Amino acid sequence: MLSDNKKIASGVPSYFPLEGRTIILGVSGGIAAYKAAGYARELGRLGARIIPVMTRNAENFITPLTFAALTGEKVHTRTFDMEDAHEIPHISLAREADLMLFMPATANIIAKAAAGIADDLLSTLYLAYSGPAVFCPAMNPVMYQHFATRNNLDILRKRGHMVADAEQGDTACGERGPGRLASWEHIRETVIRSLTLQNLQGMKVLVTAGPTRERVDPVRFVSNRSSGRMGYAVAAEAWRRGACVTLVTGPCSISPPKGVRTILVESAADMARAVQSEAETADIVIMAAAVADYTPESVQETKIKKSSEQLVLVLKRTHDILAGLLQNRRQGQVIVGFCAETGNLKERALEKIRKKPVDLLVANDVSEPGSGFDVETNRVLLLDRDHNVQRLPLLAKEEVAVRIVDRVSALLD
Ligand SMILES: Cc1cc2nc3c(=O)[nH]c(=O)nc-3n(C[C@H](O)[C@H](O)[C@H](O)COP(=O)(O)O)c2cc1C
Image (cartoon, rainbow, N blue to C red):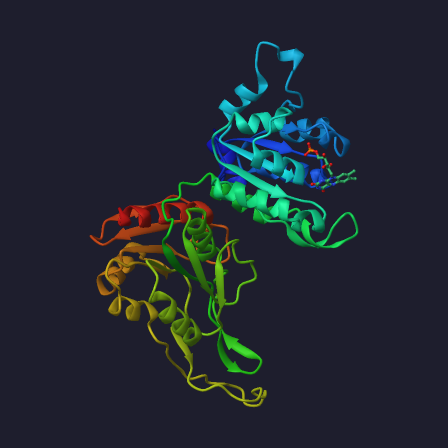
């Protein structure tokens, strides 16, 4: 377990989604083995213990020493290890693992796992293990698209394993096409998802995030400082739990989370339209966006010239999306609202939940250090239907997202 000191490095709480997990990293003989070394280190930074197991062919591409140095663990390479003759490696390692991660996975190891062939340590270990597994194929595009490889990957998927599909691009062999090892973000999310309780499987979750932009003229707009981080973290967490997630987002500079269907919108009116249509089929709606309350009454068709000393902008109220959702709420639909305040947080949050009876209200004081807009952390209050208030400490936004999704999941029980 990580100590609290490590979790709050330099005063900023971090999030370790793989804390306490042991991952057997199976490295097979492909060019992308060198990328796996860097990714192994990143997985360790997320809190996991990584135990590398390399095939003999992998040793032609990278030395065990590299993995030993990056993970701080002994690298296992042989089924018959005379140094540890009292232990049978494939049995003892299989018992320790929470996950087997094949990265990179050659066409050969994929075929052996699909067929149940056990002729070296890694493939024997796979047969002696019964937990979740993730395969990250990387190979020449013709090998990847070969019927045998596609068929073998389908067998592994049907067995319940996850596959971080290879990506398009230039491969080491000089050909273009699908076959490159998936990106770090793709592999990270697949690993985390494979180790997360799938308690939102089959659920449709709609999340809104980010600011909106209200046009003044062709070059100017009125907006706010929302970065979208909180909503994106909630969308990512819902996907990790197996939900089918749609993210309706205003303009943000961060990338949308993996696996999430993203609808980009600009103004509060665009967001209202997208939410109305998506909410019709959503089981859970989480409204984390900072939607403009006011928008210019009219948009100038040409750029407003610098002339008079003062310029008065007339604004009108935008449509209240949350109020509309509550009015048209489907039977059993869970609705989560957010409120951003600057002072008197508890009183204002209670006032809001009385007016808008959401199932859960997430309230934060955006004037507090480390909270709210454009930072990686947040300190929130959670208010439920009965107006009970839970105060969470300052946490990484990913961890706040876990707490919010925990509360939402409990409402479905
Ligand atoms: C230079 C070179 C690069 C290779 N790159 C890959 C690769 O990226 N993916 C793959 O599936 N096989 C690749 N191979 C073929 C595998 O190394 C070969 O199929 C081997 O038997 C895999 O053994 P393993 O799965 O036990 O590690 C490559 C072979 C060579 C000589």
